[in-house]
Length: 325
Ligand code: PBG
Image (cartoon, rainbow, N blue to C red; front, top):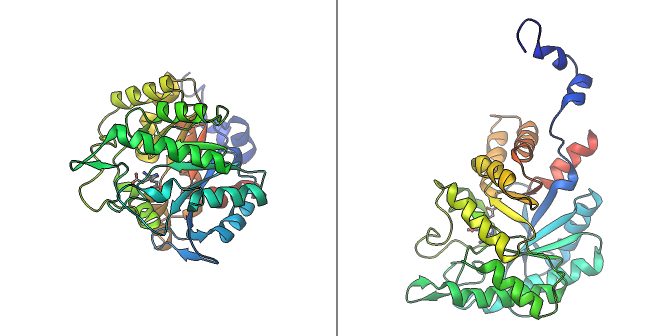
C-alpha cells in the first residue's frame, strides 16, 4: 500500500463512505448510568461540579430510572448517601437502607432496567474510607465481611448485579461466597478490578459526600503509574469469580483497557468517571470546546480501546444523540 496508488482520503469523501468503513459503533446498549440516591422526598439537588447530575430522593430516582429505560439504556448503578454515617458503616447493611429502598422501588416501578449496586462503604463511614479502620489502618479482612453482608442485603432487595469498588484484596471472592451461601448464586459480580487512586474522582466525592476525612486512598487504590499490576489485579478478580471486569477511570487509562481486552475474555467495563465528565462540561460551558462532539469522541475512544460496557454520566445525553442519528 503506497501513495499514489493508495489514497486513504478516497473513503473519507462523504458520510456514506465514512459510515461504511467505520470500525467502532457506539450504541446505547453499551451504557450504564450512575445515579446518586439521598434520603427525603422530592429532593433534586444539583451537584455543582457535574452539570445535569443531581442527588435524588427515592421518588425522583424512580423517574430518572424510567427516563433511562425510555432512552434504551440497559442499566443504572446506584450510589447511596445515608442520613447517618458511623465508624462501622452500619447504615450500609440495614434492609431499609437508602440503597435497599431505592432498589426495591425501582424494581417495583421500572422492572425492565438492570439495577446494579455499588458495594463500598466510603459513603457510609464517618471517616470516609472504603474500609473499616483498625489501628489507624484500613483493615482488609474485617472489611470483606462487611462488604459481603452489604452485597447480600442488596441482592435481597432485588439488585440485579453487585459491583464491589472498595479495592480490598479478595473482595470479589468474599462477595461470591457470601452471595452463593445466601442463595444468590445467579446474581453476577462486576468487579472494579483495576481502580486507580485518581484525582478524577473529585466531583463524585462531592456528589456522594465521601471524601476521606484523613489521609488518602493510596493504600488500597492503585498507583496510576502501574500497568502490569493492573493485569495482576484483574487476574485475581477473574480467579475469584468476577462476571464482568472493570478499568477505572477510563480516559487516562485507555492503554490498560486495551491490554485488558487483549488478555482476558470476560466482558470489560470502563468507568468514565466524574472528573472526566466535569472537564468536558466545564470546557464546554466556557465555550472552549464543543461539548457534544467531545462527549461522543471520548465515548467512542473508550469503546475503540476495548471497553464492552461504559459506565457514564453522559448516558442519557449520548443516548439522545445516538437516537437522533
Ligand atoms: C466508591 C467509588 C468512587 C467512585 C465510584 N465508587 C469514589 C472513590 O473511590 O473515591 C468514583 C466514581 C466517579 O468519580 O465517577 N469507592
